[in-house]
Image 1 (cartoon, rainbow, N blue to C red):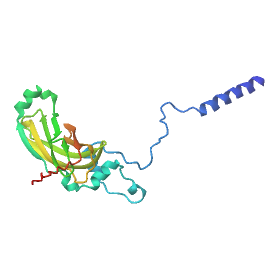
Image 2: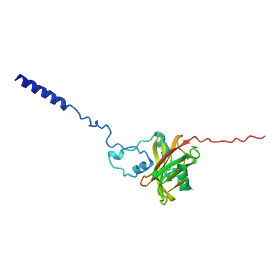
Image 3: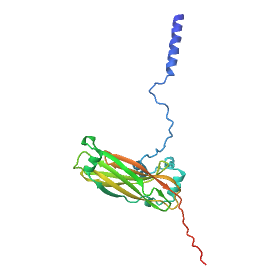
Image 4: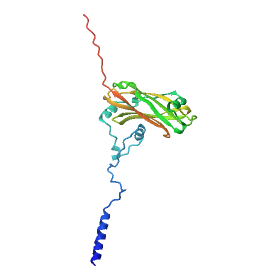
Length: 232
């Protein structure tokens, strides 16, 4: 009888201990807030988010938080005039890309942004700059016409404030070197600081993707006043 009681007690301890164990593979409880909106990491994602209908109620009140400087920038801007129409030009053909990259068809589709900068980089409020981009793109088939979808965005503190696209450009003969120039207008009341212009290039089937940011420095406008020397 004593052995039976001891055995029953031992089994009870074992079962109570197992009841408190959590499987190793079980994930920890989620701490994310319901309805949280993920921050877009690309201009394409930002544009897709803007195109989504805003739901009513609490979810409709959830909006992406931008920096105070970024909010002031957009408040002073005409969004339609921030980023102008792009001018694409074929700089060189497929043979030049093959020589530049030592390209072999086995490499598949290749996209590389060789240059992305603002000209000039330092701009005063109310002035215009120009985004200058040069990229190379190539695919294995010299008979294919590659369609490049271009997106352009304005960033501050790594947050996207405004974006445009896609603008399409066809590259013949399966590859080439392309120059792009895009006018950027700085609003009159834009806060000073460091911003970035994002250049994104992608194939419709995402066989190639290229992205690069170009810094732009918004400086205070310096008014030059010429004082005429008085003559007697």
